[in-house]
Image (cartoon, rainbow, N blue to C red):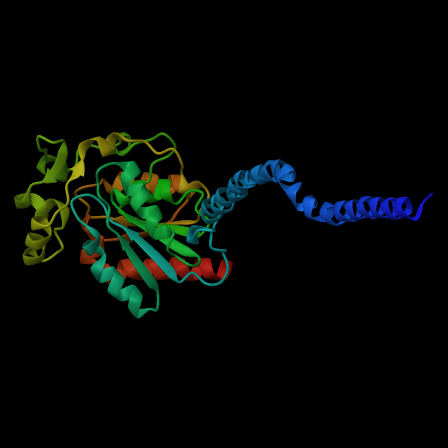
Length: 317
């Protein structure tokens, strides 16, 4: 081959070599251009934003953690379940018809002087159930063994409220009605001739019973000074007439030791009926020559009976 042809061939080879080199150097720059082809893949990864929905379920467990709080509070022990240990230092007093809790004021003062923690229930006198509920609210606040005391209609209330009450150590009935199971006040009052106080009781249009003010002193509180009975009659609390026909479904005196203050000069509840009830329950009977309103006329004597009962119960602890 002539020198001229050799020179041309060499130049041609150099051109092909340069083109190959250019192709090799251009290839890397072409790689990024391929990234757009990869973008769809990135878009398919973007939908991974849905993981937020799982976040919502994560918040769902919150209600279950809050809900149990209410049942926990409901399961909290109540004061009425206080253990029966130690001496009896709590006294709960339950009043009867035609009076309110202040009828116990003299007894409260005497018991407080003796060191007792005393509570006087304010009965609405609208029904047996309402009065029992009011008494149980006060019982639930006692922090230890308690003696439960009822006067007149209050005896029916403590008979029902004192049953199945862990912190009630004993019962004291003061000229009180003490029914047996499914027995009412009227059932017991029929065991004797009508008492003088009955003639002074009248019903108003709403079905509540009132004691005639003019007969309050003679038939209800003959041994209480008249100036005081005038105040008591002015503040008397009427009782629903239907209450006297309501029967008890529980009988506390069948499971608790009992004492009975029998008022021998009573003109509202027959002393003979009082004795019948006291004997039937096996109560320790303490007679007092008193009218029906013994908590007012003989506050010191009634307080002494309660104190004696509490001491006897304390010795049994």
